[in-house]
Image (cartoon, rainbow, N blue to C red; front, top):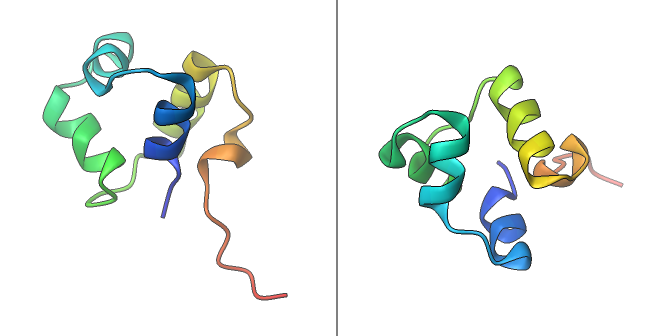
Length: 65
């Protein structure tokens, strides 16, 4: 699971803008945002760089405390 949607909302950024920056289709980015599919690590790192966040901020940990 990822937090791309939350980070986009926090920063007031639209999915279409992110899709253009990634050179990906809107449908592909929407799949990431809706957690229907997960981006490859390289793509996740690119998203973090574009959004100026740590890649860890885009991931929901499944680690139990």
